[in-house]
Each structure stands twice: as C-alpha cells, then as structure tokens.
Amino acid sequence: MTGRPPTVALRNSRDSAALNLVGAGGHASVIADMARCLGMAGVVLWADDEPDLRRFPVGTLWRPLDELDASLPVLIAVGTIETRARMRERFPAVTMPLIDPSAIIGHGVVVGNGTTIMPGCLVNANARIGEDCILNTGCIVEHDCVVGANTHLSPGVRLAGGAKVGSAAHVGIGAILLPGVSVGDGAVVGAGAVVTHDVRAGVTVVGVPARETVASHARGG
Image (cartoon, rainbow, N blue to C red):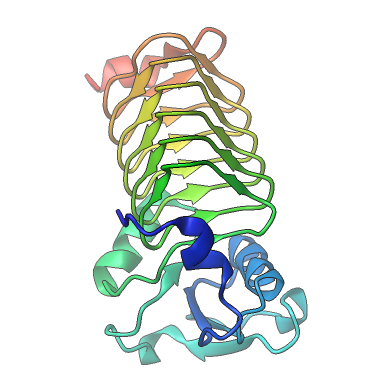
C-alpha cells in the first residue's frame, strides 16, 4: 500500500497520460467514466474482443490484449476475483489508485496501488485498503477498517469501525459487517448478509445473521 495521500495522488490527474485498463465490460465503462470526470488524458481498453465503444466516453480506444506490454502499468477493470488475480499475474505493473471525485476519503487513510474507489464511497479515518481492490459504488468503510489485496466490496457494502476483510474476498451487494468483525482470505459474504461474528477463510456466508452455507461445511472450508 502507498502512504501518498489519495486526494493528492488521484485527483490532480489532468496532466496524466492515458489510463490503461485490462477489461472492456460494464465495470470498465464505469472506470472510464471516472477517468473522464478526473480530466485524464484518455482511456485505452485492453481486451481480447473489441467492445462497443459507444458505451464508453468519447475518445476511448481499444487494443488487443495480446499486444499489451507487461511492463505498462495497468488497472484491472474486471470484477471477478479470480480473473483479476490471473490478469495481475500476467501484467504485474500497477497503476496508482483511482478515486472518483465524489468519494470522501478521511484523514490517515492508506490506499494501495491499482485500487478503484467508485462514485459515492466514504472511507473514514485511518482505514487501510490493499492493492487491486474494488470499493464499488456507495460503499462505506468506517474508521480503522482493513481491506486486503484484490478484495471486492460490492455496491452499498457497509463496514463498521475496525472491521477487517482479508485478501481475495468478495462482499456482496448491501452486506454489513458489524464493528470489529473479521472476514478471512478468499471468503464470500452473500448480498444483504449481516456479519455478526468472524468468518473463516475460504467459506461462504449468507443471511441475517450471516451463517456458513451447507456447501462450505461439505468441503470442510
């Protein structure tokens, strides 16, 4: 993670070079729109198949993924945890984080490179966000929370003060983590779940209060 203040590092971007994105789907279209709002020079989409560029801001370009130089810093613009990890292994050079102008970032927050903080997010004082994370639209990450690398917080997620989410985890739309709760690496929290107790690594929890699924028990996760 970088100690550079995100409000300086990410929002004074009007003289920046083009933003290179791996991916060309819906998630990439939102990131491209964020880049436009930040006044960045342009966006290049690197993907196997040419997308409909009418879905992206004017001036967005497409290039075949197999032509991407692995030394070029890129932002991974796909939402699936496994695909993100695979693409980062293939293209290890990381951009600075990208924060939408509407997001509110508190004092002492640390944001890792390659992370995207989407419109309407609130990250309060002294929270720590790892590399290559997605804080999707309207998330609230309260004071002193910790989010591990390559974790996806879906739209509307709420992390109460001091909550922790491990690496490569996925927290579903509208889920809530109560104060101080920990979610392990690779765990999945279902949409709308309320997590009242710690969640073990690699398991899936759903419901209110959140409980492990039968499949998690069956595989010994």
